[in-house]
Image (cartoon, rainbow, N blue to C red; front, side):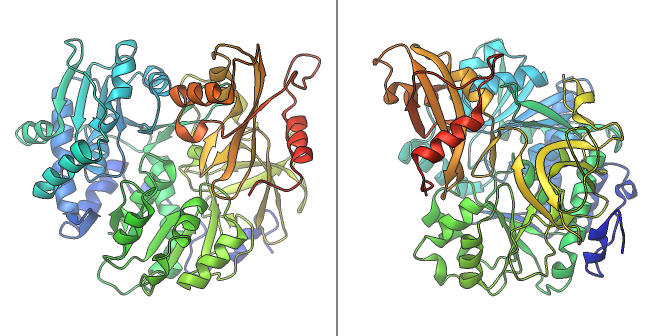
Length: 567
């Protein structure tokens, strides 16, 4: 038995115990290798429009050449704020090929959240779909942004795109009015970037694995999100780890092309890592710009076979609740990967019953490029654990004194591996690591004799809403600006549909502060999934003698008031 790493004995024979990202000179070299090997393969299908790897190669080079012509110094930050549309990957890869760093932004962000990320990252250029331009208009004067590239949903869909843009703008009215023609910010339309970029010279910046690639923002316990610095090596390693883990199944798929459902937003680290894993293996991505449209989602799935389906529990449950979902052809489906939030045994059982494909649960975090632990892909039984460490990941469990605990004992999970970040931008990173270099995840786990990990709790008070991290401090700091709110505290409570939902306890000045007032203020200042769904007014909040809110007491109060979980 491997005493220090018992999980290695659980690996299938075809899964290597380690991976070596240094086989590539850079992340860009990996992308270019994909373009050369799979040039004529379809890389994406979106609303019936197909693009090949060669198409993305050409478009990303045009983006890279245009960006270089803007005179940005090497290593500059470029922001990308888009849903899953065909131009997302060419833009992101173009940013990297030009020698710059990409910071993906959640397109649902409010102006306040967008302003913080742009200012903290120092981004001077942003690519944005016009559906979300209004949020940028609100704050752009307070950010370093100098150049704005505006895109429409259908910009890379040819004639179909004209129809898509018309429906989005005039029928569904999904593009709020905005004004971004201020002389202080140069505005360029994305089709013009492609047109001009194709005729501009491109100079290979010769990037290396040690250089920064992605500045991925995650929730921060101080109330502000932090930018995890992900190097090219981190990202290549995560892609290789995931590819190695899937190998026992993918090596047996004999279809010409392997189709991966990409309903998770590409700005999310889980989806980004999967996109790179897929490109390295020549997969075709079935892009789903709006997975909330469940009937439309089911219709999309009915049009072609799909082999790999990564999603969060909320999405799986939503599909299972659709009456037409059971009528789909699941004969090609080989891997169902659950991540981003805890999968429930009930949803996993229903999924297996309908699709005959077991749901495999894993765990990852932004700081590890979404690679960390996973259950063995050939297992058919849902076990409720988050699995075992993937190749080249080492995990230890420590107590509050940084001493390692024994098997089946609770402690904080700490992780080391080539996929793990060196730290955050503009942050004191010493506190993020143990003395021997393990990243402190903040999650409380126990590990059994075989190396399987059970996630017990979160050391921090993070709330997990449909796979998205929500931190109480951020919501509290925003809601304290609401007129009439004297004090407030936020906790997460069980929610069958989205894992957890946000509950806020409010101490108010008077009865003029109603639940409607709280809800409206939250919607104006917070992304939808961060907004409190449950509001309770109280006279005082439980606090320590130094004034820190005792959230555990509030959780106990909620359970006492609601002995049956709100499902």
